[in-house]
Amino acid sequence: MIRSVVIGMARSGTNLLMSLLNSHPEALFYGEIFHERSIRTFDREIELIEASYGQNAQAMRDRDPVGFLEIFFRYARQDRKILGFKIFANHFPEVQNQLIQDPACRVLLLERQNRLAAFSSAQIGQQTGVWHTTGKAPETVKIDFSANEFSRFCKFTDRTYKDVRERLDRRGEYLDLRYQDLLLDGTHVAIKRHLDIAEAPRLSSPLTKQNPARPIDRFMNPDEVRRSLDLLGHPEWALEG
Image (cartoon, rainbow, N blue to C red; front, side, top):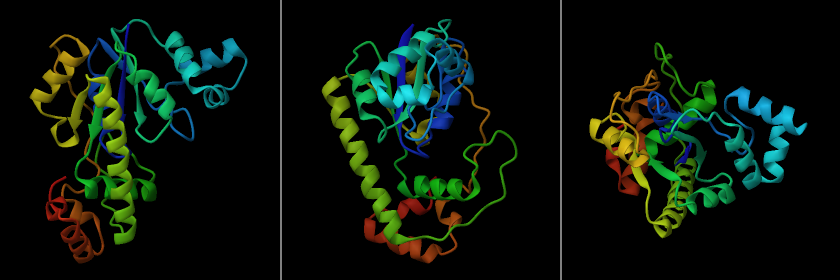
């Protein structure tokens, strides 16, 4: 069994990437074992851990994150070549460092470079409580744009990715992925080579796009959005998803 981790940020496309990875028979990626507020993954492994240790799994994790990482992999399914999970770049840095410093761990870094798309997706998700869909897309929800809030989001996201990239560059080998490339065949080939899994079958996902393709169409005050993007030097973020 080879360990792997997907490092990203909220609304960077980690749900899509996880579903693509889990469509391959040699890979199994769990959810957010190390989300800051809860353990968000399959119940079976968590139940086994709690039954074996007689303790609450989240309490165990919060008390000793790195130790819980080892426990989790011990109780995870062992019938796949690749076992992994996703973690947000601003959550549990000690766990990230443990995996980054492990030369055998296959690390995938995912970034959604269009900050407006990520920001609007997060805002809509918080308002609707819908974070991914597999059927008909939900009705369009428009949100109010706050330039100050968006500026803080951009600065925080830029700073977080800069930090994790510096740590990964010191490591040397990782796969750098962009949200807009996730459905490209070339990206799928690169992922399979990085994880050392078979070229067949083709990666696929049941997830459907939730929001309008143009980020500008997600806001009630698009003129304010355009002014903010012009000041940031990224007017193109209004149009590309």
